[in-house]
Image (cartoon, rainbow, N blue to C red; front, side, top):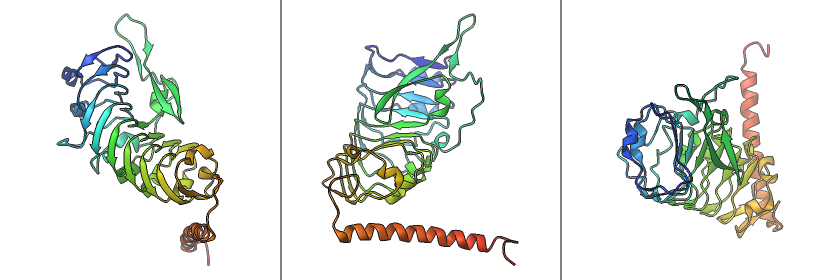
Length: 297
């Protein structure tokens, strides 16, 4: 019974073997840093308990939007296809059914998940290198249970960032950098309330930075550099605490932490918009309190 397959950092070539479709107990598949030449293995969607899929740094290619049915393994929590040659526009519902990334983690002390053993053989722990907050980190053992990651960076994806990404409210790391995404940053990103690391750099994103991003209280690291974003940088704490390099090479951006000041009109409109948003939230909160039974006589 195959539970884990880690063949990373070899010189494996050819296609990913479709015989893996018979490994119905497979949870962990890591083929990073090889020279595998293949299209996206959508057939892996039939594996009922696949949780970690790492195809990073190979020669996978072509679109992944032609699939007859959505790629949605119900347990998938780490999806890393960084540094390949995937192209095209993602289906609008591509992330819609990734239910494991929208559910809170239930973790028990001493949980032995991802410690694999054969009969009469010692345990070993699976491990994989991921990119988090711009740096590589090694995930081992119980870290797999906690981390929920999507890394599709360094490919050639096009089109807009999908609104359906906002359904994955337990996602911790999102890296979509070094592609050809265009259009605005969708407001649905503000629904990913567990997000700690966001990298949208090196794309063609435009329009203003959504002030809602400043409400992501766990967002410790953000990189929006090398895009076409414009207007005042929102004043939310999680945005203003970022390094100046996070906003570099967006000629239309202005305001702190950049040295470029905004014109009076731009800054006033930005502040008015944020005040109006706060006022609406307070109004609804007050209304809710007023109508609580027994609060007022």
